[in-house]
Length: 206
Image 1 (tube, helix red, strand yellow):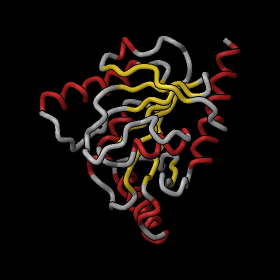
Image 2: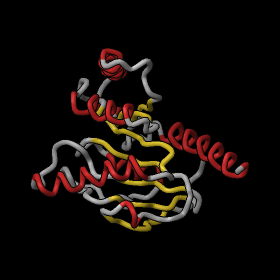
Image 3: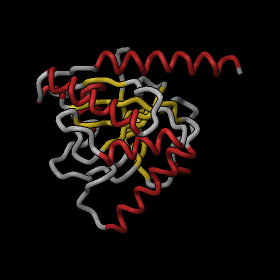
Image 4: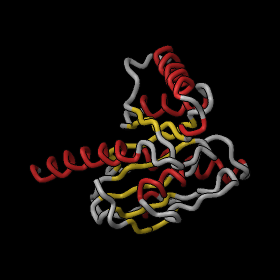
């Protein structure tokens, strides 16, 4: 898939105010400072589509971007550490939950994980929530340019082990990416393209 157009549509904290279009949506979420904005900018070929910041917890709203006029990329607030008040955090964590559990247009979430670190409990817990809630998702390991191939394989294996220990039957589909080197860009876009084709095919048969 080639991304020709990517435009910002709306930011809000109320799921009922999200776009009414029944276009497939792909949500990007991860711990604060995981490199989400950089990844979004990399796959969309826009240096400033998503705002990057050295300050974790910058994204605090549901952000919709219309891609190629036929699907939405949704930038969600990070979970875990963020320099915001507990009250603010509880509010946006609540609308994240609302989004995942009520948004019919969501076809897949991409859970971003920093590959430089060994398996983090907070990531395992978040993915367990996604699995228990039957929300389809893939794992996107970020910042692969920062460590060796050996360490990447070791950390992925550690996640597999932890997930199997938490009663997962199999490892979710995953991607190895680097926003700096555009690693994984084609694989991610090809995956989205395949899912889109399936969605549009099923909708045409309704």
